[in-house]
Length: 398
Image 1 (cartoon, one colour):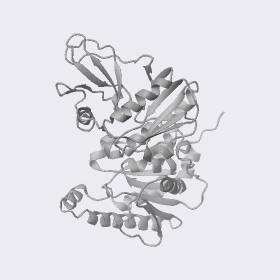
Image 2: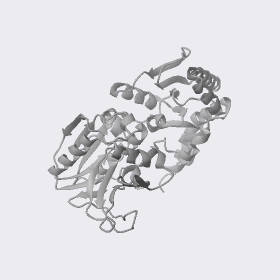
Image 3: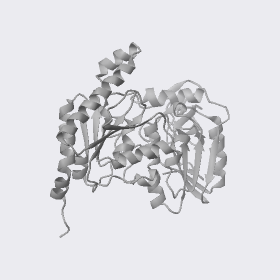
Image 4: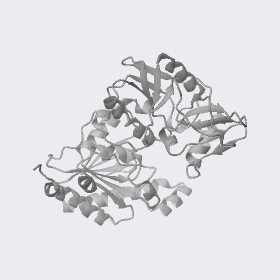
């Protein structure tokens, strides 16, 4: 965590003349927590990331007056350029912010979970458990967008729920800056969580209220995680269909592939039960595949779907943030990897297994181009071999 009151723990140099910057002020941009200062040598006004969230690894400096951006080239398109654009075009409209004070503290840690991507916001929130358990002398203040409020765990001191939609998660809201600047006056000491992008050592049930999978269940249930914006279709074909406005065809292709996959698994493992869940309900499935898809996510539907994941011995789905909660609750996971997503390996999986040998068995990454019968054989092997694998790998205390 980084202290921002009474002192701001920031050390950096002017990007123009390399003079150490001093006399920082905070800007609560929204997704970014920023500092602003004026160079004592060249007099440039520099705004820069506090090293929290994605700013830990991809920190940017901005000279608004000269319209200059300094920082990592690799993430400029999705992180740096939207930042400078937001600072040049702040939003001044009213913003609904709900403040819940559960317990009072004079020293607090602020965990900012605002983001423009669902998965990023969820992953930031998972940092909360560490602060609740390891820093009881601090109160944890969690900032979330409305869609993430239901997952805030018990034990936090305050919850600030901000009505910023995902699509506007990178915007600079002046009212948000004013709100946080005013609220932190109530505290003697304020730190900001580093909000790691991929935290570890957390219990997902503390966030969703839904337990992890119970491996003692006899009838194995297999669930496919449906999504309609990244589908199980050849990438080139999908781009052509999208360009022609025929994306719906890709959903029918995905539907056929899922039925084919489940049919072969059913042949190899007759005792298995099958389910489809996720966002969107286009296309139909045969009656032996239970359809648990929804048209929108809210607290009730998310809890219901997490229970489906928890009941599943195995979940299968296309790589993406849609696999975070399934992998955290289900017994085992198959993550189908598009060719262009291998650089994001493991970023969509919430490991709930600490033994690396068991984790290697429970969480599998397969090329999306792999033949369906091969995926089915791997899936059946995972389910049928798991009990003996655990026995073979278990070492008793001597």
